[in-house]
Image (cartoon, rainbow, N blue to C red; front, side, top):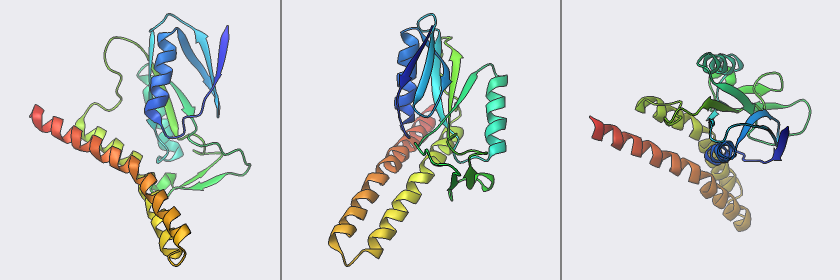
Length: 199
């Protein structure tokens, strides 16, 4: 018998992965995803583990190839959205993305910015990026949208400079958008420190 849960995690990938792993520990395996919907079926508790991967900067072909690569490795893979856009005729411009992923439409990568990846728990940590350089590059790519958000908020603050309320609001948004950038930079520094310790 299936069970449906309704959740929205936006760009909080770690929170989504922790929740999915908590569900798996209770004996629920993911079978389907929707914009807000997660469908589970019963399974042996702790049999599966999950990770969530950001792929919103890739082209449609790159996403499909990466998904096929993961499935060839024996993983189950689900696409997931990072936003709740319910309009028709969707087009998104992603200036931070690879050349083929800069324009996203309903027929390509729109609302498919994340991959939920499942594997059977074999007792080893589930990390798709094991090499230090690969992890650093992945975290950098994850932070690019936030860099653009900070830039746009600061630009709006400059445009509204004579008006103190709008300028302060834009400055606050820039600080808010800078938090994920700072977190990513701290993770990258930690990886670099650990790599130097291992050498």
